[in-house]
Each structure stands twice: as C-alpha cells, then as structure tokens.
Amino acid sequence: MRRLEIRSRVAAVAVALIVSLSLVGCSSSDEPSLTKKDGTQSQEFEQDDLDRANAASDAVKDYCAGAVSDAQRVGCESHVTEDDLP
Image 1 (cartoon, rainbow, N blue to C red):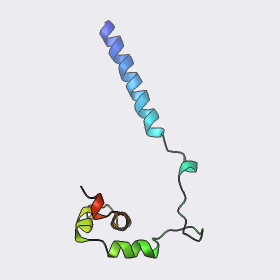
Image 2 (image 1 turned 90 degrees about the horizontal axis):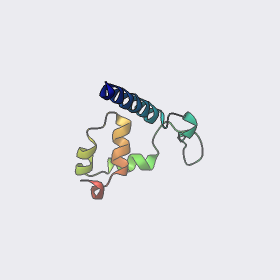
Image 3 (image 1 turned 60 degrees about the horizontal axis):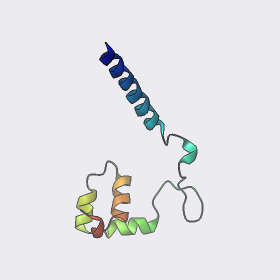
Image 4 (image 1 turned 180 degrees about the horizontal axis):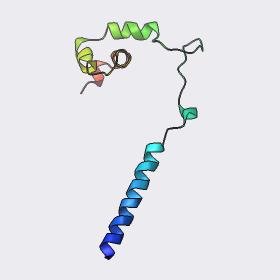
C-alpha cells in the first residue's frame, strides 16, 4: 500500500513539473519584436540576409533543406556557415 502512495505522489510531482516547464517562456512580453534596421516592424528578410542565403554553399543548402518553411530555410542559409556544419 505504501508503494502505491509513493508512486502516486511521484507521478503528481512529475506532472506538475512538466506543466510548469511547459509554461516557461509563454509570456508574449518576453518575446523579441521583429524590427528592421530603421526601427520599423519587419515581416520579411533584410536584403543582406537574402544575399547571404543565395550565396550559401551547396553543403549549407543541403544542411538547411530539412526546414519546415521557406522562412526557416532562408534564415538557416543566411546564418549557417560551413564552419557550423557537423
């Protein structure tokens, strides 16, 4: 009977910990805003990011090919260098 109580308490603590950890960082006030160099809000890439992405090596493009969106792929290709590859 004692083991069942201990397991139940351990399970309850584990669930509470998981819920607490999942809520960390959910506050929108902590999220950075996307702004351009001139301070205006951005919903697109800067031209120098696009240029770096276009000039990325084939190895970097292969590494970034698994991106789930075009934005993620361009972000990867513009910021990853061959030195960063595993």
